[in-house]
Amino acid sequence: MISHRTRYSLAQFLSIQEAAVSIALFSKYGAHHLSLYPAQLLNGIMNIVRDQNDETLLMVLKEIVATPGNLRAKISPKHVFDERMHDLTQCLLIDGYLAQDKKLLQADPSIADAAPVEDDLIAALRSSGAPRCEGIIGKINDSAEAFRAALPDYNAALTNVRVALETLAGDVAADTARQQQITSTYDPTKWGEIIAFLRKHGEITIEEEKGLVGVYGFLSPGAHRPLGIPENQMARLGRSFALNMCWFLLQNRLAHRSN
Image (cartoon, rainbow, N blue to C red; front, top):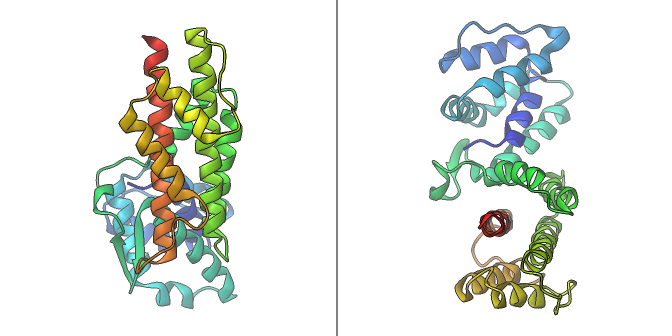
């Protein structure tokens, strides 16, 4: 599934092309009655991109990835095209799609029908009332920015999302203590003590604790050395693990809170 970030990156990419290019691309794959005006081109493309289903967007994206030479030839200076294409392909990789040999491939077969967890997680965080939700969202966004940079910093991408996971776990532990009227007996700055507290007081099971500890360890410096797997794909995998664990912690807490 195509995330909000990738949709807007696609709009930015298409906005450097003539309006007719976008109209032709979307019309070719089933979008009708499109109107774009040069003075408001980016806004117009954003509206089109927001309205399209994932299947249409994937067809458009596949054609863009398959025909970069044709699209690049019309842009001057060329670095404008290169920068926007880099951002688009990195956003796609975050979503689990790999642009390789002029083909758009699924980096992970499990993503085909899965909604982008990052979009849902950010929306859920904002409505959850978590004390540090904006800081957590900021770290998730910092992780994506490091991933998408002109010179990607994959260690920073994983470090930032690890901090987001640790911060959310701390908020969950504090909320658990409040709900159960427990005097805190753990160090809120130490991951191991936070997770042990959650397991001890029934917030998570032993198996869930092992999963959280494993993901946290995977995200730690030096623990995710790629062996035959490109660094960008290892970083994407680590981000995905962390975001899914954030989603689990948040939804699990909300369920316990309502019981």
